[in-house]
Length: 306
Image (cartoon, rainbow, N blue to C red):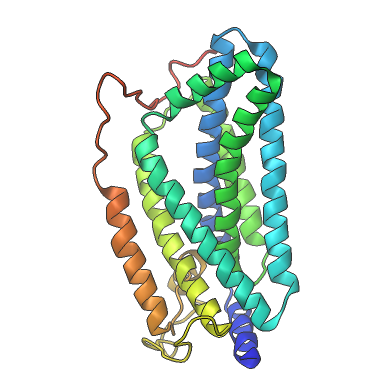
């Protein structure tokens, strides 16, 4: 089992995707998750400015900073654990981390699908109540609103980066994506750009579902190597003889979607079942809670103060 785990990890490192692929995949994740977080912060800041409560902005930024620090600590802790432990234990940690990432990403993607229409009103109502309570409550609102998105991003990147052989490029790509999202958020706030949020989150949501399916497949393989799941030697197919992992299509499929040319039967079943269940749930029409109570999500920043 130890030899199999070492062989699997060595093979993963040897066939790690190209730098451009790693940057693109993690960068798109950073852009989507960063823009989600940016929109949350933008709503909170705009509400305080419109309410003439600029004095409370420092407590929002304190909550945002604390959430970023927490997310960085979570990412560093998981990454440190998976990079310092070797053999079967490393595969066990990687497998569990991947499954946790898939569970959280799935929950957040499906939640955002239904909550997007009311998230603005919910945040404003919560912040309004927090202002009446005091600075600590305002900080907590910002902390949990940003932290929720950040934890999803950290776990998603850990699961995604496992396929890159401990490369630094996925982290760099994530930071670039977040930086672009931050710039877009500022431009949105001042009305310099407009984005069709419904289309953006729909298509990037589909992308995340496919990425999560690949991470699930990776986690299944890791747990098979660790001896937790059966069927580690039962391959569904083996395309290694013609699938060139160094080609453009090989680096894209492997680097972004965790595709392997020799998956096990359980990996294929898990991937197909996940996509077949989660993708229709994500794409199904959203039922409106009623025109009287619904608060539509902003399609642009035209109603935000300048």
